[in-house]
Figure 1 (cartoon, rainbow, N blue to C red):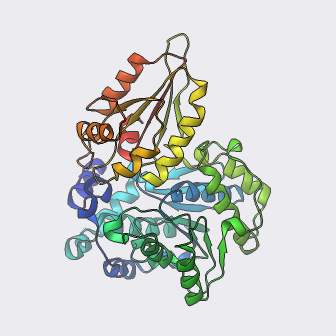
Figure 2: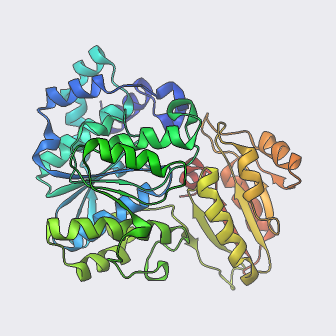
Figure 3: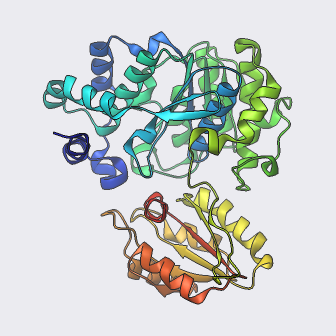
Amino acid sequence: MTYEEKIEWLFRQFPTYQTVGKLAYKPGIDTMLAFDEALGHPHRRFRCIHVAGTNGKGSTCHMLAAGLAACGMKVGLYTSPHLKDFRERLKIVEGDGFRMAPCEFVEQFLDRWKSFFEERRPSFFEITTAMAFDFFAAEKVDIAVIETGLGGRLDSTNVITPVLSVITNIGLEHCEHLGYTLEAIAGEKSGIIKPGVPAVVGEFTPQTRPVFEGRAAACGSPLTFAVEAPECLHLKVSDLDLPGDYQQRNLCTLSAAVGILQPMLQLDLEAFESGVREAARRTGLHGRWETLREADSVAGKAKIICDTGHNAHGLRWVAEQVDRISCNYDNVFFILGLAKEKDVDAIAPLLPRNVNYIWTQASSARALPAADLANAMSDHGIPGRVSFSVPAALAQADSLASDKDLIFIGGSNFVVCEIL
């Protein structure tokens, strides 16, 4: 098979959570432990930073990787989901840029472990996690930044023992797997805190703080709450090429993490900051308040911004930023598509009311049909046009907007993927 055929086989035989939802979820880490042992525990050959959380963990991972690389380190970066290329999940960030795992490495890994896949039936995420660890070991990285998939305690990545555990925040997401209260979800996410390993918590509530404190105390792990930590980095969102307002919270978490890592890794903070300033470019991160097109007065085209915020916790910050900047435009066209399992009733009250909505749906089987989204939003008194594909929604917005308007696209990784 060609590389493309092997990737197609992987997706067909082992569907991702992103494509089929909870059907891809495999509780427990027994299979991952067996896979890790068969591989020879590759993650033990490099240092790791482990990052969990409901939102912000992807941006935090990329900023960490960019900063560490700017300090002269060879950094492995494992994140999910990918938007365009499967290999976005497995990157080496080094010097001024990044590279993805070679197609040849992916092919060889799939060939070498095919019998294990057939015998043990690991999940897609277990396969990609094992592949990342094997790749980083082969590359002899100095350190790897590892993002959890879903949860923490039973996540495939939780076979590692990191030098630092980071939990960005807690929101009501994936409740059928993680629990229906903030305390229960915090309990699952805090499962990445390991005995004696320092931990940073970015955001907390009165319900979740005792959970984190209890886990850290049980593990004998030094615990830092980011808002209570001394300021280590002196960066603002306006300094970054990741200009979403919500990045200010991620910067606070990042600063607390660097405060712990700096003496451990002898980091040059000025160099680290220079890396963070260009984190999107240095790591190839897309879909975080990304400008896809500037306004064009000659062609009469509106500015286009996209963002992958996809749940109530994430969309709140996106909606507030759209609302804040709407005064700079004559009109705002807000293209929104959601996955079926998202809580529309929780999202609707957060959305701005002074924009023109176009409800749409991605081509994924998990996409909420645009007509259903329109009906649900109508129940909340939010009218909008309906477009049954993402390209059609953008074409519709383009036909209505001028160069003095703004088009925003988001609500789902799938929606942003199709635009990119």
